Length: 185
Image (cartoon, rainbow, N blue to C red; front, side):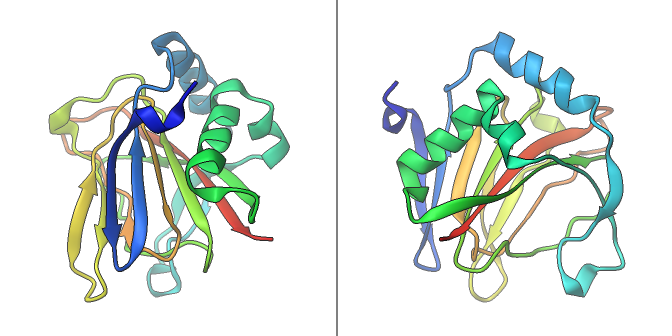
């Protein structure tokens, strides 16, 4: 598959790249992975940054080897490598975020000098449920939003300040996303 043909957006923020990739996965595969992710043992022990460390987030870590052996997740890793990661970065961490209406998500960066890939796992997402990932400029002002879309993959430099979006009051589903962080070798 030519993954480059699935890039729907490519922008630069603060001299760093953000790519959005759509249409990589069949609906049945998206639904199957969602059922697996939904039933993981989530723990309320993750934080976005030191400045918001008083707010805990629901997440489920899993070993990179498990991600590399799970078809859709493996394809997310391969796509990330083909488009931005290359051989200069190793997969450091893989985890699922579960965000519910009323949660707080603060702006943060991921591992310095790395690449982050974010897979939106919900098989259905309505526009009025919101939950967009917001990206910020150097003045900490929001400059771009990536909406939640089933099977979407956003790949970006980890040094771009960003925050996960919280679902609206109309959403009774958890917003599930899988984050892959790649660090320089």
